[in-house]
Amino acid sequence: MRCVLENIRLVTAGNDTRATRVAIDSGRIAAWDDACPRGWPAEDGGGLLLLPGAIDPHVHFDDPGYTWREDFAHGSRAALAGGVTTVCDMPDTCVPPVTTRAALDHKVNAVLPRMHCDAAFWAGVSANAIESGDWRRGMDELWAAGVIGFKTYALSGMETFRHLEYAQLRDVLRHAAQLGALVGIHAEDAGIVAACRAAHKGATDAAAFAASRPVEAEVAAIRRVGELAGETGARIHIVHLSSASGAAEVSRLRAAGVDVTAETCPQYLAFSDEDLERLGTALKCAPVVKSAAERDGLWQALGGAVSFLATDHAPCPAREKETRTFDEAYSGMPGVELLLPFALSFGYHAGRLTLEQVASLTSGNAAQRFGLAPRKGRLDPGADADFALVDLDEKWTVSGAALRSKGQVTPFEGMTFRGRVRQTWLRGQKVFSHDSSAPARGTVVRRGGAYSFTDART
Ligand SMILES: [Zn+2]
Image 1: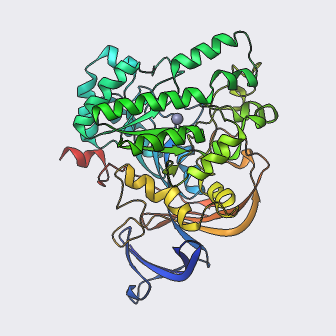
Image 2: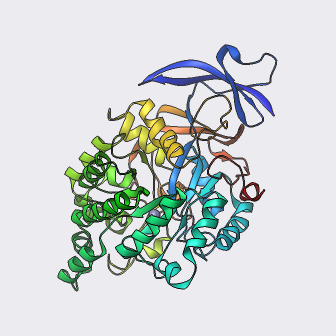
Image 3: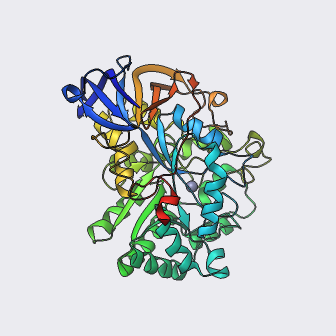
């Protein structure tokens, strides 16, 4: 229950670090440095750098329902191996989709026994939900249950979770504003994409896919949804932003007083459309990667228009990537295990991010936006003792086959990363160490900091 983790380093500011130790009591941080009580059992941190346990605010663990692609057992073990202690799971790639309280209860009961990291849950509103039921009551009950927000699509490829027309989105935003709830948006304009697809009719290669989902579609959707948020007073969050132009639109909206944040993903920071031909379907995701200039501009927006990193973890078996045409391949890739190493390798070591920024972009900022702070995303006494202990200089090569996710096709295959997670601590327990992981019990994290949806009822 109690211990002192010694021989660790802590980021103080920028890239500065200092040696320290931390006392842990009942899963929470009790004290730092000289304030640590004497006589508690000691644990050796091996001189590693301690970062707040990473939060991946956007994963699709597909459970229950599409578990041939991913499930909570594999997804949450992959998370811990990557220093991610909390994931925020999406509502659309499970059966049934989480658009009602009953669906949320069904999902939580199903995945809890195989949840090895902590998880918060997104709910959602689809056209299906609007057509088939009392969606406003659904939102009321889900928000009261502690979900972090409502995912919506301006463009969706899923028959079971169809996108909203802008008029429907306005209704949803209006109701969300009354609740004070955050609305997450997949921002690609369905009209622009449909027109571009029609212009490339018959073409099924990567170039046609990229041309059918241009940067203009993202910018137009952000602008339209931003206007609706301004009109209704809703809080919005742009998921998996893929372009600097989109980030600029977010900045304009924010300057106009709209409560808007955005996240981007490693794939949009690492790759461009110039890589599509070479990497093929391993790089297929939606939105599609954009130009090199858009990619480079996204790095500049990190910490400004783009508040944090997410992975949009959405793996699939190789057979769903090895299709006849690019068009037929599944959109998505595994990501949760690479989030923090990516930020260290291509952010910190490339001189683009300080260690302090890595911590806020992979943990603190998402916790703040989604109402998981101060228990998550912080290292203050009283916060959960969730840590990633990293060897900042260890070089290693990404191998899809070594990923713990069910889906192992990654565009990062063969790339050299620098900075590796050596230990992960979840609520005061060492739950991952080197290449062995102890079976950890994850729990549900509710917005506001309670630990289970059962708590929310009392
Ligand atoms: Zn997603």
